[in-house]
Length: 326
Image (cartoon, rainbow, N blue to C red; front, side, top):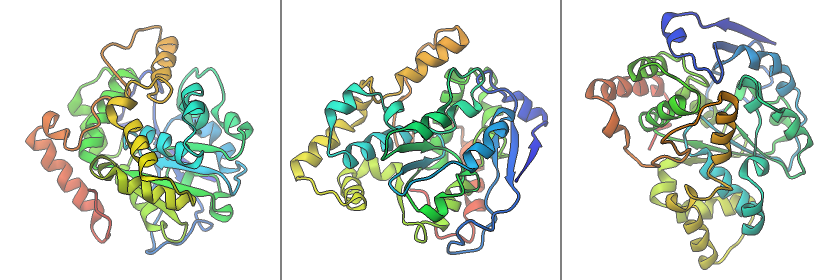
């Protein structure tokens, strides 16, 4: 079902992190059941871990329900933000439950236990046993999603983000949460050569973009959520067949603002920091899961050389596609 290629280059070894260890490329052997989309595309592989490989078939054969809600993204592309927004809109703005039940339990990260070493639980089983309608967060590309998604057709929401900003955010995430102790240039070089966990980002996005109409995927951009959240909220409401007053939407927009979200313990993934600290036995210093949430933050941290290299990398991958990052 899958072909697994160990990543053994010096660079791949240099960017290994204690949270997940070594990495491999996971390729789907037969994607004939996948939707065709607007243009013929070979679905991208994904950089994952040997531990994930042991769980890949469980995910492939996972039962999918038509009332499922799947939040899909590459890491650090507005996932947590999107999860909270989508959960509240689809649950009649139930702020009380949202404050009492952690987002990780309301919107389960499907493959979390499948790549984190020594994870004290089973997030795949958690999804299987979740109360319907289930909200499921996932960073996997289309090739590694459950096969039933494409016939059952649940709700699918994808959030994209400019790779230059995403790369900076992912670097800090890798360093503080994954325990990465290598250099920033090594990390960026690994991203640009598709050797970082969950990569490559752009083919990941393009695969979902290609099937968005066929699968009725709600396609969002991190940058739209920053610059015109009111419009995004109304699009999400239409997708779920929900109608709220302007005042209710203004209240929701405030709830989802960066300053409110980063201090919301029920939705800011602070429990992930606590889990990482318990697994590593070390305190994670000077880090918040929701760090800056800015557009253009890469200009503060990437050199001109790396900005140019990312622009070349992005242009190469987008050649022939009508998709553009914001």
